[in-house]
Image (cartoon, rainbow, N blue to C red; front, side, top):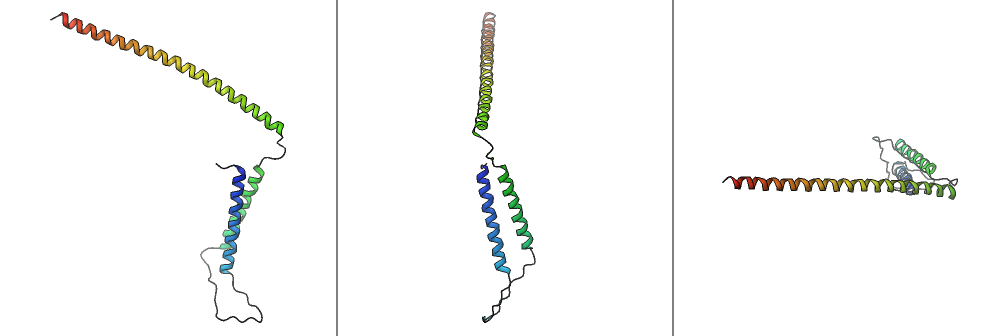
Length: 144
């Protein structure tokens, strides 16, 4: 995920895109103006767009984007965050990191002890199976 400044830049770019598109729509569908002392040959009529209400669409897009920009600006860190408070926060994070590392070491040691016990139990089981096979062979060989 992008940081807040990148999100803000993206949102501002999107707002600029909305403005450009709305101006393009205005240019596309606005009726031509008549200028005095200027005779124009040919009559062009603008196309009427009845399917979408572009005014409502771009009003909604621009206002929503402006609200997003305000929210992102408010979420930026203020100048009140001094170096001292940042250092204090870093110290706290370092302590939490050290505590987590200590817990992880204890868990790894416990896991290694359990692994050794399981390996010893598997070794005992394998030896018992070999002994049973040896006894079975001896018993079967002695009765013939």
